[in-house]
Amino acid sequence: MSSPPTAPSRTTAHRRRPAWAGRNYTLLTGAAVVTNLGSHGALIASAFAVLEAGGSGGDVGLVAAARTLPLVLFLLIGGALADRMPRHRVMVAANALNCVSQAAFAVLVLTGQPQLWQMMLLTALCGTGQAFFNPAAEGMLLASVSAEHANRAFALFRMAMNGAGIGGAALGGAMIAAIGPGWVLAVDAAAFAVAGAMRAFLDVGHVADRAPGGGLLADLREGWVEFRTRPWLWSIVLQFSVVVAVVGAAEAVYGPLVARDQLGGPAPWGLALGFFGIGTIAGAVLMMVWKPRRLLLVGTLCVFPLALPSAGLAVPLPVWGLCAVMFVSGTAIEVFGVNWMTTMHQEIPEEKFSRVSAYDWFGSVSMLPLATAVAGPVESAFGRTSALWGCAALVVLGTAAVLFVPDVRRVTRKAAPPKAAGLPAAAAPAPAAESSGVSPG
Image (cartoon, rainbow, N blue to C red):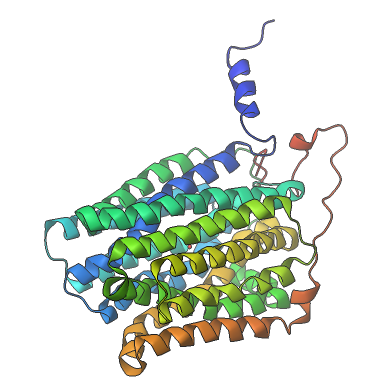
């Protein structure tokens, strides 16, 4: 009997990508590219929408805080739901909410003078969507690769995702300067719609049935036990609660203000953020070939350069100098990011990926709303330069403290498990229960 007509096309499709990069991994990567193209420009656009509406630096901080506060409030619930429900459904629903909120924000900016409370409300809805999306997305990605290919897969995913951020940030800055922030927000809404449609096609046919749990609170307690019994995990999350807060305040509030007052407007700041994206690509390319044995020690050392952008804005450096430090920090944080995801994939059971990821996200962003909200008052009290130097110092001190945790220095890369007998490498089952044939904010 002859082969079905679809067989040749499937064979050809598999040859266009690595054997380990199956349907779910490919869809997740493609959707991440689409959303990052829109979101990186939209982050700049929201800040300049506030400024063009007559807002101050403090107002920019309030809008940024409105995005991150619901992210903190709903992350743990989002993680528990993602481990109880099909993760792709949670992701699609979150994308739909993000699409609607960003579209409404765009309409407000394009049709008149948006009020501060309106911008805060809509960005809060966007943050709520991200709270449910992030744990589900990270759990889905972690479950879509085998241990043997995890390092390369995560590096390639992050390279594609951050590469899209280059175009998004640079194009967003240019579009804001040319036609205003409203159209950039509209593009972001469209990107969420496209990405949600792509994620609706994720293959969950081989997802193992979840064992009945004791309810949402029981699931959260179980995730908490996984989190608190791993010193390497909670110590680095505590570190990032400080790092993310001060870096977020510097980039969301002080960066646009320095750009407006001393760099010539949004386009140079978009260019600097684009160089951060180029740095992340360089870091991802490095991590596709480099597999450091001490995953977390190497990763933690690479967090120190995140102090450079705040210091560069404090000076302030000229545009080319700011681009250089953004490139270095982007490269360094990507080395950390791949090592972190590889460690999570190696150390955390699959059925708890999303809950542990939620505690990770929750701890990491818990102080961000406060930091962005007080960025304006801190600037008024101490001056912008002093505030930026303080951000840089906190990154250095918090990162140095983590190096005193023994487990951070001791966690090492484990050898990949042997391939299943009689199966080629691409077909060997992954250790994760949610195997897709291939395999997180």
